[in-house]
Length: 402
Image 1 (tube, rainbow, N blue to C red):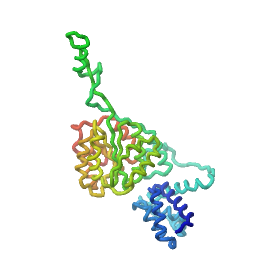
Image 2: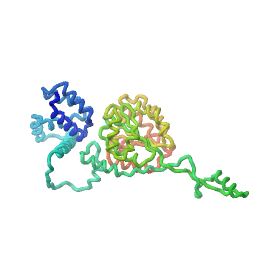
Image 3: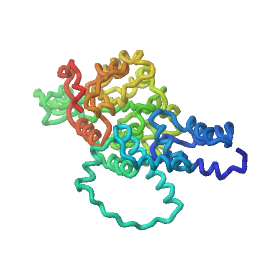
Image 4: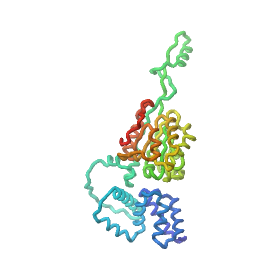
């Protein structure tokens, strides 16, 4: 490659936009690395071209089918016709085939979006003969991982309209109230001194009520995939409606995301987070990140009975080393600890990972977080009173409750 290959670099930019629209985390940094890789391997062989882009743009195994389809469609593979003919033959459709079809649908929408910016729109008339039930209800129960680009945009609009009402909790402070149930000794004595009589008029007080702080610890590792990107919209919505809200992102390191999420525009907030977070879609060190949070931030943000939302799938690269002790400390420091796990969407999910086993004994609630309905249930649960410490079950919630 040389300076005259500007058309190829322009096509690489369009290819990166297509992959990003289809769901792959491809940013400007990866595109720069792709250009450097192509300069290293050259353009003499198509296989070298394919694997150079594959090595830079694909970071997880489940991204390989989507990248393969996008590459052969975008760069016009001559063998694509044979593959399309093979799709016309009768075959058995399993779960992997269904996942491949979902990826192909996202890819087709992404490529259609790229073409729409260059070609004039053609008006078409279609007749929908599908069974008619509420699209909104279908969207509420659809998994974030299976959403198309249009459905994902509709889900983001629904999250922006979600009402998150945190139930107020009684604090240790009191305020004067004539209808209170407790006698206010100081107020009563002051009233007696003002009147100058021997009688002491009684004054009453009640506890101050205030919404507790909310702290979110969100896993942004590669195993969380699309869930973390959708949940960031939910976290942004929660931060906008709560004055005492703190958010932290973790993968291999801990990042304070509170200030960027205070931005009213969700796109600007996420763009700022993308530049601030260095370990996006990487590995997971849950124990080390929670240890850093407990050491540096717990005393600052977990006062006055805070509610902690731990969003992770429990898959730890270090096998849960030191995670149980950090979870025990985190549980003692907050009023209510809720674990939100997207893997709980499976009916027969069991915490077989070492990280999940270390987390589960120290949570007060265990909830799925994989679609709009689960987010609505979470918002409803936060508006209700939590169980008292004495009423917390010794045996944790059933894992097939999802």
